[in-house]
Image 1: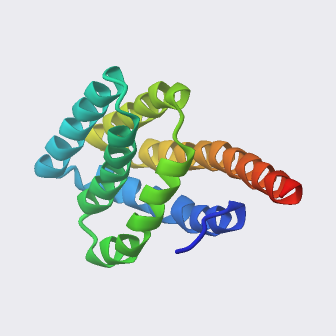
Image 2: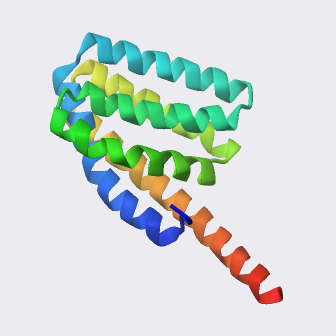
Length: 157
């Protein structure tokens, strides 16, 4: 993928919002102990990376968390559908991650984990949808600003 701009992100988020909401709801319904352990470990590792200021690691762990939610759903069709999105998602996270976003993102992941762990399917779906919608707004704003800066730089050249 040569570039990744606001339109590319819009398309990705259109798909993510629906698939991640479904994955979270199914994960809450299933409450797989191994999946819950994986999610808890990823939350801990993300907080550690965040506290150490390792933003690149946080981006990867963020993507790992979303992948683990899909796997915790136990639905092989959903897992297969989400797998090709992983590289795009990782690229998006690296392009749009900002230090001030890490704390809120960790908190949202923790609340999502709690809903999944409690088996609260409705809350898990709602939290996943709100999380992706919030990420959409922030990412699109950053990508639009990058695109504008690049167009101004090109115009000066």
